[in-house]
Structures are given as C-alpha cells and as structure tokens.
Image (cartoon, rainbow, N blue to C red; front, top):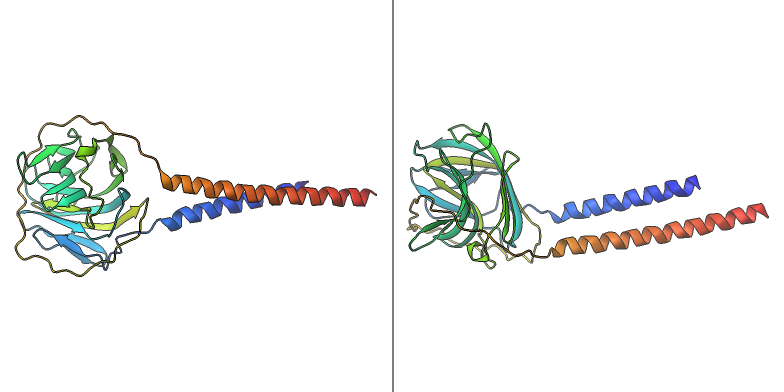
Length: 283
C-alpha cells in the first residue's frame, strides 16, 4: 500500500509540474529587446542592448511599441531609470496602455511633484480627461534625476491594476467608454515623456489571451510628427464596469481535470493489480 501511495504522490506531483510548465510556456514576451519597432510622435526613442532609451528633448513625445495583435488582457512591467527631468511639477514619465490614434490614447501619468493618475487624451477639447483620482507616491518614491523604480500594469479589458515598486497604486474598473484600447491596433502600449528622459530595462509585455499575430510590416517614421500638447489633469470621473469571463483560465482548468482523470485511472489500475497479486500470493 505504501508503494501505491508513493506512486500516486509521484504522479500528482508530475501533473502539477506539467501544468506549471504549460502556464509558463504560454507567457511569451512580446518585447524582444531587439527587433521591436518604435513608433514615435517626435523625439528620438531607440533601443540599446535591450533597453528602451527615451531622450529628453525638452518637449513632449509619445513612443509606442509595435507588438502586433495584443489582446485587451495583458501585463506589462519594467524597470525605469530617470536620466533627466525638468523642474516643473507636471513633468515626468507616462505609460500608454491603449491607443486609437496619435492624439487619442489612455496613459498612466507619473507627475514629478503631483502624483499618479490614469487619464485619456483627445484630439479636441477638453483634450484630456481624468479617469481616476490622483494617487500619492508610495513611501520613498522619487522621480528625481538618477532615481530608479519598477512598474507593473495588469489590464484585463476594463479592469486595471497599476503598481510602483511592487506597491499597488490603484486596482480599479473603468467605464467601457473610457477604455481607449484599440482591439485592431498594433501599437497600443508605450511611453510618453514630458520634458524628461528615461531608460526602460527588463521590459516585459505578456498577452494573457493571445491571438494570431500579424507579421510586423516595414514602415518609415514620419519626419513631420503631430504635436502633443501638455495639459493639466481635470476632475476625475465615476468608475463602473462589467465583469468579463476568462477563457484562458477555463482551458487551463479543463486540462488539469483531464490530467487528474488520467492519474485516477492509472491509480485504479495499480490498486486492482496489487489486490489481485496479494490474493494470488495468499492462495
């Protein structure tokens, strides 16, 4: 009986390891740190040894990343180093989490002396509108020149979680109308710099519900980019949303159930075999 128990334990452990490996294999970093094209509004963003470099040209520009058909269920994280920053309160780095056009996007802004908030950018008045309140920086956080910090964005359609240095800044659901993610777009994520310079290392973009990727086309960067105007953050709006189903979790649960069924069948066979053997030896 001890032998059967050991076999069962070994089989169950193997199944768990197989499922963990399966989940890990699904996570493919869409930013390879080498061939990803950078689409920019102005400035000169570029990639050096896997690090996204955003130069400070004393203006504001948006640099989005061509990562293909990213679903609206993704994670993005990285390490930021502020290389330079203007003294103004509203300067700093912003993280683009959805983009419909050059001047129509959603961004999480990290303002130097103000705080953090999610806002939407428009082409026409009011030009910008806050989606969340302004949140305070976590203890010890700084955006001064030379400072470093990590960020995490977890977006599942209207549900958005944002972390700085592993501290959750907000975990909220927004109105569908406030979600500027473009389901057919190729460059929904990126960064906007407002009179600052930054280096983004260890950048990871995971699609939690991947779809067939569109081949990356070749294109020429425009020499006459559109201008992005700075705006202050207006009053926050009310936040509501609907809960969506998670197909990827369903698939994983089905596969786990199937694996457990196989283990049970094998265990039953071994038990029956052992019982018959014991009876034969008893006779």
